[in-house]
Amino acid sequence: MSQNSVTEKVTKIAESIAGSLGLELVDVEYQRVGRSMVLRLFIDKSGGVTLDDCSDFSHEFSQLLDVEDVISEHYTLEVSSPGLDRPLKREEDYVRYAGRLVKIRTFELLPDADGNKRKTFLGNLIGLEDGTVKIQLKEGQLAEIPLNKIAKANLEFEM
Image 1 (cartoon, rainbow, N blue to C red):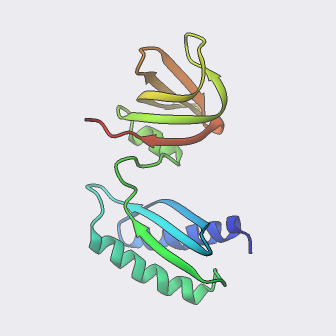
Image 2 (image 1 turned 135 degrees about the vertical axis):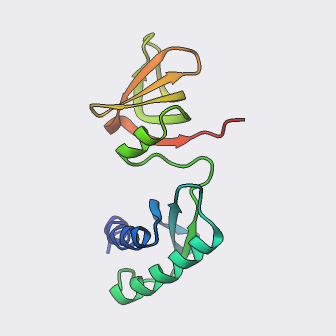
């Protein structure tokens, strides 16, 4: 089974468990680290997750994953908070975190409002409109980035 299909199946299982526990599944990673595979799940909730949240989720998820027999090879399971630099994955994230400092990396060079082409955009997230993320860059200009051009986006820690 490919890593992508494992990730898709794991995501469905994890989302249902997270929902039942009042949590949000933020991200799923399934990748080779050294000689073994690591399955990382990042969960969150309003006010942040606790160690007990991670433990409860991990326990329920492990049991269901074993029953469903999604992963045939040996793997290590890690469950944690997304941290201060939480990734922005879904359209709702770009609405929910409007006003926050974000860093967005694109697949290709894109221009900001002044015509400067770049792949990395750092600034305050304005929001999402018609599939386009709007950000007020640190340098002052506006940038509009189509969602399908975003390779990676994260909240940035503000001092």
